[in-house]
Length: 279
Image (cartoon, rainbow, N blue to C red; front, side):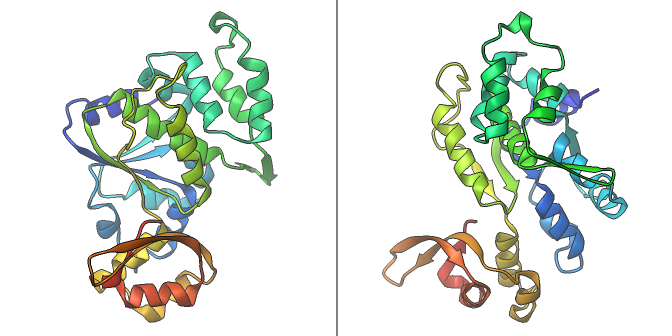
């Protein structure tokens, strides 16, 4: 059984609902550093927190993370790919399959879709979504734990566009809590196809999608005074790709996209009035 009825209850009558969709890497970060990033600070801006089924599968075996999610102080809903995505696309298997395909530029996924896209709707198996997640991703098993590379990101982005299509006037913004830089290119890939056949999602050309990365969270905590510059190197020991804006005294600004090492990130946070971290 899915949770579509809970989504409906939360969003159908909403106005400018603020949604957060959680990815596994950010759950790990917030769980590990809850003392520095209290749940009240992280989740207060949102009306509802959504977690796709495959993201839930990646952390649910861990008792501490499961308890952390259960204690989030705003309504939190697990959204099952097999039960909850189709109702948001008018129960159209073909549209959902196309959305998954566009969100999955990986060889394993494309081999799956090359076979299944040729079938008529009445030829699809009832459990084709399960078959896609079983066959369409590089899979690794460690003991009893099964991980599927990029399955969480595909689920997150597909959910994001299902929501925007199904609730065109009810959503204020959707923030994706992920620090995987590749998710930006996947989002842009979907957006290019979103309003074309066979998807026809009716999505705005500038949809209200933003990213709550761990860098964004650290930058915000520095500005709020709840995190010190000296704490950043232990939280961000490695360089990573970033998007940020730099402002100048003449009211102009410039957009930066490149790999930012820890020292440079600390300097950006030190001069936080001059910058805005986007990703």
